[in-house]
Length: 308
Length: 292
Image 1 (spheres, each protein chain N blue to C red):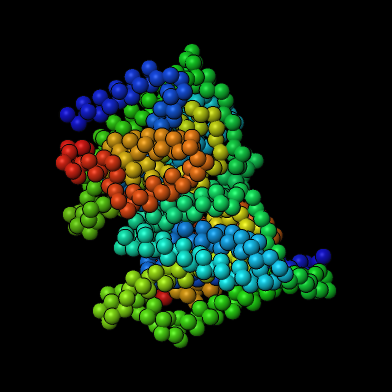
Image 2: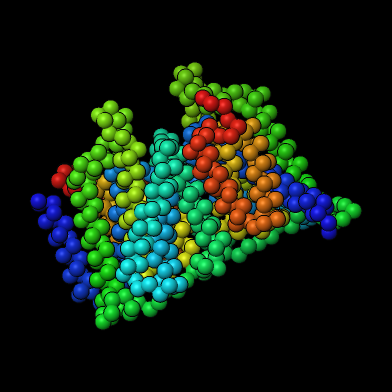
């Protein structure tokens, strides 16, 4: 019960921040929240189930285009489009999972990477429809929720997406499935002996993760008005991993913390130098060398064992 | 031009790709086979080789071939030094744990890319070929330098093969590959072998880059494609199998080149990446690798 209250409190703080911050910062926060949905989904697969995927850009891009194509070509309204994007992400995750989960470890990383790369190239191949690298410009954000200003609508949708994602991920990891997911991560052989089927458990985790990524992709495309093949590049598989590693893999709030920390780190660096890639690279190397458990993971280890 | 000569031209172009691909992929394969490290920054070592070649030819001046020979000697050495540094500072501290090293080499990829962008700039720059003569076929003229690339790559590969199978260092390396702990028990300095292999792998990528840079220009983002192709080759050839890697480089270089020539480069890449994913899923030992 205490845990739920703590998470609701975090959400309340976020809601207040969105309402009182000036427009520029509120938009940044909306961006962070949408991307944090992606990170939260990645965390379900990587943090809790131990599936290190390098192909999540595929599910994110599936969300982006799952929402963007119907909106562009059939004039679908944005809210149902987010649902479509979510389903596209989950569906593709199921398809990839069916094949990729026959492998493990390094092979799994490479197989997911290759599927994502094939997806990216497919988007380029059908550039006439998808807009390729140049992408598609989405309709004006005023149409998101009729009657609300674009900024408000953006804040409301981003907040709702993140709130649902956070509470859902908390519910999942506290459920039976969540416990078995962690058991798979810790010792697959023993879990198998206890009668759990690793394949179905991992597949469920991956599909859940894909649904989150799809929702995030759809939200991101619609809220910020752009869908492009660049969302399927390797970079968008690496970023959620970086965010999760930074905030703390296997903690519910770590993904949000990592996304925000990285966002402001890159933003701050962009003010000083143009070498923003360097920040990403150095952050990755330092994290894996000195703090592989991330911010929240390290705090949890140092005594605050109650952090979920 | 009728179909026959057209095909010949396509095959020769593809052979150039296959030759440099074989060098790059053998580098990746050595590192993976011996150290069990998937080096995602391998493409950046390639890029670094090309960029260094541009710098070296600029410094040396004089006739083109002197600059080229200097680049062929110095660029791989420079890249090997960077690789050794990365091994000492990062990979060794992670005790070569496979998943952690992938994350670390992704970080390395960004660092190297940014370094190239900062010190070299976003432009694509050409390096003059060491010599210019065209071989006149009845239907078309063909750059003699491209043929030289093929021969040079074959020579380097033969040297690597000879080193691995006939020299003491190669023996030590293979012993480490088969069983790291037993090798250590026999007094082999495994850390040194790893550092050497990582440097050698990077140097091979750099040699490939120096060879290709008079044909393709040097650019800070050029590492992505060789990385992808090298990955594909190593996996299809069987992880860690040298002979498989070379055969796969030939097959993939040729088929990629031919599909790209006659249909579309993107389609060729889609097929190749899907092939890799499926090979890993259904035949993890590679198409040519033996079951272990």
